[in-house]
Length: 298
Image (cartoon, rainbow, N blue to C red; front, side):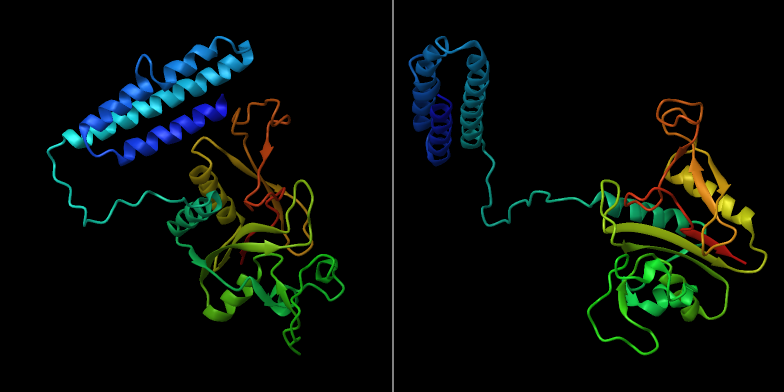
Protein backbone atom coordinates (compact mmCIF):
# COMPACT_ATOMS: atom_id res chain seq x y z
CA UNK A 1 0.00 0.00 0.00
CA UNK A 2 2.92 2.32 0.67
CA UNK A 3 4.08 1.95 -2.93
CA UNK A 4 0.53 2.41 -4.19
CA UNK A 5 0.15 5.70 -2.33
CA UNK A 6 3.52 6.95 -3.54
CA UNK A 7 2.69 6.11 -7.16
CA UNK A 8 -0.72 7.77 -6.82
CA UNK A 9 0.85 10.93 -5.45
CA UNK A 10 3.42 11.14 -8.23
CA UNK A 11 0.78 10.50 -10.87
CA UNK A 12 -1.58 13.15 -9.49
CA UNK A 13 1.10 15.84 -9.15
CA UNK A 14 2.31 15.20 -12.69
CA UNK A 15 -1.22 15.56 -14.10
CA UNK A 16 -1.88 18.71 -12.08
CA UNK A 17 1.31 20.31 -13.41
CA UNK A 18 0.30 19.53 -16.99
CA UNK A 19 -3.32 20.68 -16.60
CA UNK A 20 -4.12 23.80 -18.63
CA UNK A 21 -7.75 24.74 -17.85
CA UNK A 22 -10.07 24.91 -14.80
CA UNK A 23 -12.35 22.09 -16.04
CA UNK A 24 -9.42 19.69 -16.19
CA UNK A 25 -8.37 20.64 -12.68
CA UNK A 26 -11.93 20.11 -11.44
CA UNK A 27 -11.97 16.62 -12.92
CA UNK A 28 -8.64 15.83 -11.29
CA UNK A 29 -9.94 16.95 -7.90
CA UNK A 30 -12.98 14.69 -8.26
CA UNK A 31 -10.86 11.78 -9.51
CA UNK A 32 -8.38 11.87 -6.61
CA UNK A 33 -10.17 13.62 -3.73
CA UNK A 34 -13.85 12.94 -4.40
CA UNK A 35 -16.07 10.69 -2.28
CA UNK A 36 -15.60 7.92 -4.83
CA UNK A 37 -12.11 8.98 -5.83
CA UNK A 38 -8.85 7.05 -5.77
CA UNK A 39 -7.92 8.08 -2.22
CA UNK A 40 -11.37 7.20 -0.90
CA UNK A 41 -10.96 3.68 -2.26
CA UNK A 42 -7.59 3.32 -0.55
CA UNK A 43 -9.07 4.63 2.72
CA UNK A 44 -11.43 1.64 2.81
CA UNK A 45 -8.44 -0.69 3.07
CA UNK A 46 -6.80 1.16 5.99
CA UNK A 47 -9.14 -0.41 8.54
CA UNK A 48 -7.85 -3.86 7.65
CA UNK A 49 -4.23 -3.05 8.51
CA UNK A 50 -2.42 -4.00 11.72
CA UNK A 51 -2.33 -1.19 14.34
CA UNK A 52 1.38 -0.46 13.84
CA UNK A 53 1.10 -0.44 10.05
CA UNK A 54 -2.13 1.59 10.20
CA UNK A 55 -0.36 4.46 11.99
CA UNK A 56 2.49 4.56 9.49
CA UNK A 57 0.36 4.14 6.36
CA UNK A 58 -2.24 6.55 7.76
CA UNK A 59 0.38 9.28 8.06
CA UNK A 60 1.49 8.63 4.49
CA UNK A 61 -2.17 8.72 3.35
CA UNK A 62 -2.68 12.14 4.98
CA UNK A 63 0.55 13.49 3.48
CA UNK A 64 -0.48 12.29 0.02
CA UNK A 65 -3.93 13.85 0.33
CA UNK A 66 -2.48 17.16 1.56
CA UNK A 67 0.11 17.28 -1.24
CA UNK A 68 -2.53 16.72 -3.94
CA UNK A 69 -4.92 19.23 -2.39
CA UNK A 70 -2.23 21.91 -2.05
CA UNK A 71 -1.03 21.35 -5.62
CA UNK A 72 -4.57 21.78 -6.94
CA UNK A 73 -5.05 24.93 -4.86
CA UNK A 74 -1.82 26.51 -6.11
CA UNK A 75 -2.68 25.67 -9.72
CA UNK A 76 -6.16 27.21 -9.44
CA UNK A 77 -4.72 30.28 -7.72
CA UNK A 78 -2.29 30.79 -10.58
CA UNK A 79 -5.06 30.29 -13.14
CA UNK A 80 -7.35 32.79 -11.40
CA UNK A 81 -4.64 35.39 -10.87
CA UNK A 82 -4.91 38.51 -13.00
CA UNK A 83 -1.20 39.23 -12.74
CA UNK A 84 0.78 38.90 -15.92
CA UNK A 85 4.00 36.92 -15.68
CA UNK A 86 6.96 37.76 -17.86
CA UNK A 87 8.34 34.31 -18.61
CA UNK A 88 11.48 35.85 -20.11
CA UNK A 89 12.64 37.01 -16.68
CA UNK A 90 15.22 34.80 -14.93
CA UNK A 91 13.93 32.66 -12.10
CA UNK A 92 14.77 33.17 -8.44
CA UNK A 93 17.67 30.96 -7.44
CA UNK A 94 17.14 29.09 -4.17
CA UNK A 95 19.78 29.56 -1.46
CA UNK A 96 22.43 26.88 -1.68
CA UNK A 97 24.72 25.82 1.14
CA UNK A 98 26.19 27.81 4.01
CA UNK A 99 29.54 28.59 5.57
CA UNK A 100 31.18 25.86 7.62
CA UNK A 101 31.07 26.39 11.43
CA UNK A 102 34.89 26.51 11.49
CA UNK A 103 34.79 29.31 8.91
CA UNK A 104 32.34 31.24 11.09
CA UNK A 105 34.65 30.74 14.09
CA UNK A 106 37.69 31.94 12.13
CA UNK A 107 35.86 35.07 11.01
CA UNK A 108 34.70 35.82 14.56
CA UNK A 109 38.15 35.27 16.08
CA UNK A 110 39.76 37.45 13.40
CA UNK A 111 37.27 40.23 14.09
CA UNK A 112 37.87 40.12 17.86
CA UNK A 113 41.63 40.47 17.49
CA UNK A 114 41.46 43.05 14.71
CA UNK A 115 39.50 45.37 17.02
CA UNK A 116 42.41 45.45 19.49
CA UNK A 117 45.08 46.14 16.89
CA UNK A 118 46.10 42.69 15.71
CA UNK A 119 46.63 41.99 12.02
CA UNK A 120 45.70 38.58 10.68
CA UNK A 121 48.47 37.05 8.60
CA UNK A 122 48.54 33.95 6.41
CA UNK A 123 51.60 31.91 5.56
CA UNK A 124 52.18 28.56 3.81
CA UNK A 125 50.67 25.41 5.30
CA UNK A 126 53.25 23.41 3.37
CA UNK A 127 56.50 25.01 4.46
CA UNK A 128 60.20 24.33 4.77
CA UNK A 129 61.52 22.35 7.72
CA UNK A 130 63.60 25.42 8.60
CA UNK A 131 60.48 27.53 9.31
CA UNK A 132 58.55 24.72 10.99
CA UNK A 133 61.38 23.47 13.26
CA UNK A 134 64.93 24.77 12.82
CA UNK A 135 64.20 28.49 13.23
CA UNK A 136 62.11 27.67 16.32
CA UNK A 137 65.19 26.13 17.97
CA UNK A 138 63.90 22.55 17.81
CA UNK A 139 66.95 20.29 17.70
CA UNK A 140 67.49 17.71 14.97
CA UNK A 141 66.70 14.72 17.18
CA UNK A 142 63.40 16.06 18.48
CA UNK A 143 60.61 13.42 18.10
CA UNK A 144 58.35 15.90 16.28
CA UNK A 145 60.87 16.00 13.43
CA UNK A 146 60.52 12.28 12.82
CA UNK A 147 58.29 11.07 10.00
CA UNK A 148 56.18 9.08 12.47
CA UNK A 149 54.97 12.40 13.90
CA UNK A 150 55.10 14.83 10.96
CA UNK A 151 53.97 14.73 7.34
CA UNK A 152 56.95 15.28 5.04
CA UNK A 153 56.35 16.07 1.36
CA UNK A 154 58.00 13.83 -1.21
CA UNK A 155 59.98 16.62 -2.89
CA UNK A 156 63.67 17.58 -3.35
CA UNK A 157 65.36 18.72 -0.14
CA UNK A 158 66.89 22.20 0.02
CA UNK A 159 70.42 22.40 1.44
CA UNK A 160 69.52 25.25 3.80
CA UNK A 161 65.77 24.94 4.30
CA UNK A 162 65.60 21.15 4.51
CA UNK A 163 62.50 19.16 3.58
CA UNK A 164 59.00 20.47 2.91
CA UNK A 165 56.49 19.58 5.64
CA UNK A 166 52.80 20.06 6.27
CA UNK A 167 53.03 22.55 9.13
CA UNK A 168 52.59 20.75 12.49
CA UNK A 169 51.84 24.09 14.18
CA UNK A 170 51.20 27.70 13.18
CA UNK A 171 54.51 28.96 14.59
CA UNK A 172 56.19 29.12 11.19
CA UNK A 173 54.17 32.33 10.80
CA UNK A 174 56.14 33.96 13.64
CA UNK A 175 59.44 33.52 11.83
CA UNK A 176 58.04 34.62 8.48
CA UNK A 177 56.29 37.65 9.98
CA UNK A 178 59.49 38.77 11.72
CA UNK A 179 61.36 38.35 8.42
CA UNK A 180 58.73 40.40 6.64
CA UNK A 181 58.43 43.26 9.16
CA UNK A 182 62.11 43.28 10.20
CA UNK A 183 61.64 46.19 12.66
CA UNK A 184 59.08 45.90 15.52
CA UNK A 185 56.43 46.51 16.68
CA UNK A 186 54.58 43.35 15.61
CA UNK A 187 51.06 42.43 16.61
CA UNK A 188 49.78 39.52 14.55
CA UNK A 189 47.39 36.60 14.77
CA UNK A 190 47.53 33.56 12.53
CA UNK A 191 44.69 31.06 12.05
CA UNK A 192 45.57 28.04 9.95
CA UNK A 193 45.44 24.27 9.52
CA UNK A 194 47.99 22.04 11.21
CA UNK A 195 48.87 18.45 10.37
CA UNK A 196 50.16 15.70 12.66
CA UNK A 197 50.20 11.92 12.53
CA UNK A 198 47.70 11.59 15.35
CA UNK A 199 44.45 9.75 14.82
CA UNK A 200 42.17 8.45 17.59
CA UNK A 201 38.80 9.27 19.12
CA UNK A 202 39.96 12.74 20.22
CA UNK A 203 42.52 13.60 17.51
CA UNK A 204 42.51 14.00 13.75
CA UNK A 205 45.44 14.37 11.37
CA UNK A 206 44.32 17.92 10.54
CA UNK A 207 43.07 20.55 12.96
CA UNK A 208 42.78 24.33 13.13
CA UNK A 209 45.00 26.37 15.41
CA UNK A 210 45.51 30.05 16.04
CA UNK A 211 48.29 31.92 17.76
CA UNK A 212 49.31 35.50 18.25
CA UNK A 213 52.67 37.21 18.43
CA UNK A 214 53.40 40.60 19.98
CA UNK A 215 56.87 42.14 19.88
CA UNK A 216 57.22 45.62 21.34
CA UNK A 217 58.76 47.49 24.24
CA UNK A 218 57.23 47.26 27.74
CA UNK A 219 55.20 44.12 26.94
CA UNK A 220 54.69 41.69 29.82
CA UNK A 221 52.46 38.92 31.16
CA UNK A 222 49.75 41.36 32.22
CA UNK A 223 49.20 42.20 28.54
CA UNK A 224 48.87 38.48 27.81
CA UNK A 225 46.33 38.07 30.60
CA UNK A 226 44.35 41.11 29.47
CA UNK A 227 44.29 39.93 25.87
CA UNK A 228 43.07 36.46 26.83
CA UNK A 229 40.42 37.91 29.16
CA UNK A 230 39.17 40.14 26.35
CA UNK A 231 39.03 37.26 23.91
CA UNK A 232 37.22 34.92 26.34
CA UNK A 233 34.50 37.46 27.10
CA UNK A 234 34.02 38.36 23.44
CA UNK A 235 34.05 34.79 22.11
CA UNK A 236 32.48 32.76 24.94
CA UNK A 237 30.34 35.38 26.67
CA UNK A 238 30.66 38.37 29.05
CA UNK A 239 30.10 36.22 32.17
CA UNK A 240 32.97 33.82 31.45
CA UNK A 241 36.28 34.22 33.28
CA UNK A 242 39.76 32.95 32.45
CA UNK A 243 42.87 32.13 34.46
CA UNK A 244 46.50 31.47 33.61
CA UNK A 245 47.95 28.37 35.26
CA UNK A 246 51.75 27.98 35.10
CA UNK A 247 52.74 24.84 33.23
CA UNK A 248 55.93 23.51 31.66
CA UNK A 249 56.26 23.44 27.88
CA UNK A 250 59.57 22.56 26.35
CA UNK A 251 60.01 25.54 24.04
CA UNK A 252 58.32 28.45 25.83
CA UNK A 253 59.22 29.85 29.21
CA UNK A 254 57.27 31.06 31.04
CA UNK A 255 54.38 28.89 29.87
CA UNK A 256 50.73 28.70 30.90
CA UNK A 257 47.64 26.61 30.55
CA UNK A 258 44.47 28.67 30.04
CA UNK A 259 41.29 27.74 31.92
CA UNK A 260 37.84 29.19 31.34
CA UNK A 261 34.88 28.92 33.68
CA UNK A 262 32.27 26.29 32.82
CA UNK A 263 29.53 27.44 30.45
CA UNK A 264 26.91 25.51 32.47
CA UNK A 265 27.52 26.69 36.04
CA UNK A 266 29.90 29.63 35.40
CA UNK A 267 32.43 28.27 37.89
CA UNK A 268 30.08 27.41 40.76
CA UNK A 269 30.69 23.68 40.31
CA UNK A 270 28.66 21.03 38.51
CA UNK A 271 28.97 17.47 37.18
CA UNK A 272 30.45 18.73 33.93
CA UNK A 273 33.36 20.74 35.29
CA UNK A 274 33.76 18.73 38.56
CA UNK A 275 36.59 20.83 39.99
CA UNK A 276 34.78 24.15 39.41
CA UNK A 277 36.86 24.98 36.34
CA UNK A 278 36.34 23.66 32.84
CA UNK A 279 39.25 23.51 30.42
CA UNK A 280 38.60 24.47 26.86
CA UNK A 281 40.35 24.32 23.53
CA UNK A 282 41.23 27.32 21.40
CA UNK A 283 42.49 25.15 18.56
CA UNK A 284 38.99 24.50 17.17
CA UNK A 285 40.03 21.05 16.00
CA UNK A 286 39.69 18.80 19.01
CA UNK A 287 42.97 19.43 20.83
CA UNK A 288 42.86 19.23 24.61
CA UNK A 289 44.57 22.40 25.82
CA UNK A 290 45.61 25.83 24.66
CA UNK A 291 49.31 25.04 25.24
CA UNK A 292 51.42 27.97 24.02
CA UNK A 293 49.30 28.95 21.00
CA UNK A 294 49.21 32.59 22.13
CA UNK A 295 52.79 33.69 22.69
CA UNK A 296 53.89 37.12 23.79
CA UNK A 297 57.55 38.02 23.68
CA UNK A 298 59.37 41.01 25.14
